[in-house]
Amino acid sequence: MASELYIVSTPIGNLQDMTVRAIETLKKVDFIVCEDTRVTHTLLKHFEISTPTLSYHHHSPHKRVQEITTLLEEGKNVALVTDAGTPGISDPGNQLVAHLGRQGIRITPVPGPSALVAALSVCGFSTDRFTFFGFPPHKNKRRQFFQTVADTEHTAAFFESPYRIHKAIQELANLFESTRQICVCRELTKTFETIYRGTAAKIQEMEIPAKGEFVLVCEGKRT
Image 1 (tube, rainbow, N blue to C red):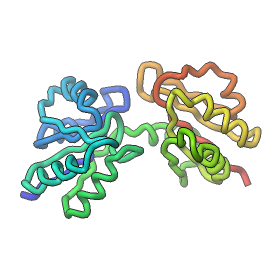
Image 2 (tube, rainbow, N blue to C red):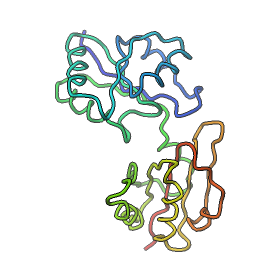
Image 3 (tube, rainbow, N blue to C red):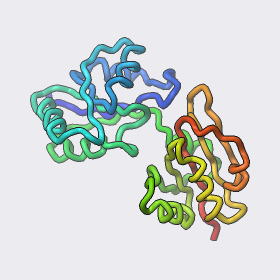
Image 4 (cartoon, rainbow, N blue to C red):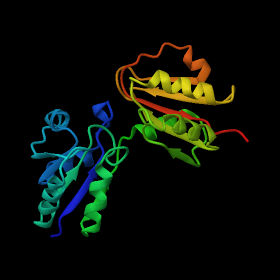
């Protein structure tokens, strides 16, 4: 039987969002490749999953990719998870998937929670077409990033860290026309989930804690 790599989505906050298929998959595979073993072990313990884990993240050496490739070539089944949400969305999982795909490994998605899709579903903007921009640069090209978002004529979405959320909203307020709407989603599915709506200038006046995970969705530029 050919080996398989499963791309398994995990909860972004609320553990009840874990699908039955995801649990069954993580129990049946031989290894789970994860971003941070400590975070994943907490999840596995909750669902009584004892499958061995291997770490794979931005700083993993190339030999870890070879190690995972060898496991699959030896007939082992492997699941890939990220700390929260769907692997490959603004994390290095897509690089591993690309490599294994070139090796002819069968790759199967086990879909589920995604902070991006969750934010798009509640933003109220048209999602017939949208662009996801990932995380803004920390320094170089940051201004260019926000200018690109401002020039986008359809819905735009991006992630932001709590350390730069207020600066991001300021950038949008500086560049957006006065009536253009944004939706700031904080801590989606978690205890302190909060969704802020309005113009960037209006949202600047709100008390938004600089804590947690953020997804920003922006209405497209009006032409």
